[in-house]
Image 1 (spheres, rainbow over the protein chains, first blue to last red):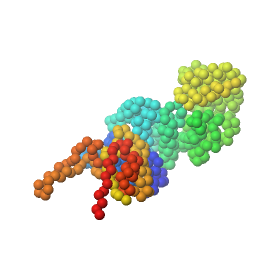
Image 2 (spheres, one colour):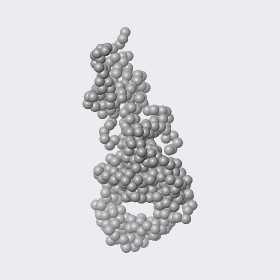
Image 3 (tube, rainbow over the protein chains, first blue to last red):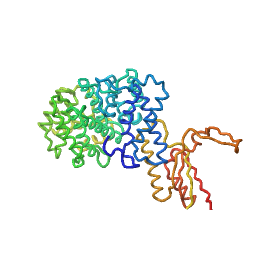
Image 4 (tube, one colour):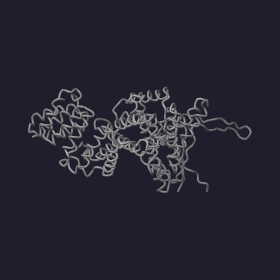
Length: 410
Length: 116
């Protein structure tokens, strides 16, 4: 919990309910056992509904977070009392000695939601629902997915947790690192989903980014989970999120990195990003998050687009491509090379991936080709590629951005 | 100033699938309304009535019977009330009209009969 989360007497801080969902749910799951995740969620929901029904009349209690926790716990005790006492008692017992308590119910809840027994899309949906406190409708809106699909995933994930009796406790030592990687992958998906401008409601997507940042920072503050790759992930999120305020122009139009007003970048987040980047360098392990954070830091450290250290950028993308080969990484590497060397060198780099099916429907591929040809003085070729990009672009703001570029061609 | 009770029928914002964030926003709107009314010197108090149970008593003295109830439909149940003061019905209604509760249910405005 952040300092000041409780707020002053009778006041609610922004996102209090969403933020309190995880710590309260985590405490209840610890109390009831992880096989009762669904029941625990009902108790949290009951507490929120009770607040919704009474606070409008009585006003907000002096410590709203404590009020919600207390009501949810009472509800859980009531439910327990009504159940047969035997089966639940065993689960309330102390965790086996081989397992570690992180001393933070929110973190332990993330570990449960990102359990390797669950498929990745279920891990993500469950984390958004249980940890980030989003409703299925909000998740569906953020992903432009049918609400029923999201609800199904969550229901199935909860059933798996219940039937397999997955443990709430975090594995000790040797098993911790792989489990932590799976947690970080989910946060990475959450952040990217929020950061990409490809679909969904903008405010909700920015909330996704903010949640991913918050949870990654939470991981960096716990001694057991503050591994160098976790710092790398936190650095990446902070440096990327710092640019969010500059990505959209006054008329709601998307702005490219080149045309953003860099004074709008969040200096606090940028500083936090560099801090975590230095902590990330401590270990032996080099993850793709390390390299992506370095790439983000090269943008963050450049006072103007032209001042960007493009040759370091190109090397970083080369390292990323070696670690995690993908045509999309090659595309980004080509952009860096087009500035560090020449558009011709970039086009040569892209020649081998021209037929790659992963790029066939990716609007940024023809958009980059258009840029490379335009800078080489071939307007007609550039225009043809831009038209193709326009046909593939998934959202209106992206189509507008491409149309503006098309209009600017000589 | 005359005194009025605003009886609020139905509970606020209880549609299925409402998210924690939306719940907080609904509460915040009631609280803002309440504070606004209080800042203008009209708010005297408010209470939530407990859902789902009540007692109805009929008949005097030893003939009286007590039954559970009223088990009316949700929209006929008073969820809670606010006690306000206003210059007259017009102003009391004006205040009630701005209450966010009207999105979820109805409000009945009743003037308190002065004792003097």
